[in-house]
Length: 163
Image 1 (cartoon, rainbow, N blue to C red):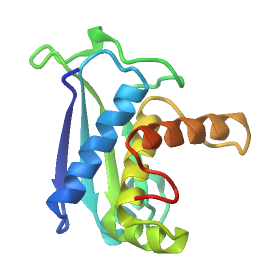
Image 2 (cartoon, rainbow, N blue to C red):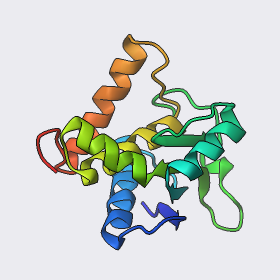
Image 3 (cartoon, rainbow, N blue to C red):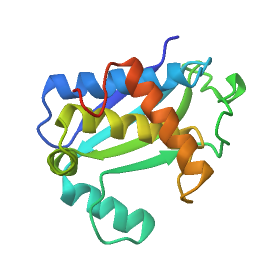
């Protein structure tokens, strides 16, 4: 599948981190069996940048780790449709995500794993939001999303104990 991941780094972002984000996004799309070519746009920023976007879009005046902006209202497991594709590219713009690299590094320390694992987790988490998953409850929706995150990260060889 010819998915595309565009990364706009507002802060200094090592090429290896950009590649990890790209791999994680593609793995999430593959893991969810998205069978139409999609585009995902990723903005890598710091706490100040994501705080401002969080305030502007959600009215929440604090930084967060990741924000997701889906183009479609999908249900978990529902796939983007070919008829939604941009006629110029034949690809579906699935949505945008914004990751705070600063917050990812802090959370990695807090949770006792690598920054690479945290960034990959946030990218997978965000793709699942773009595909309709949510975790508003502490019950089945959250459990289903967590299971999908761990399955996708596992296929990348990224575990809680590992990278």
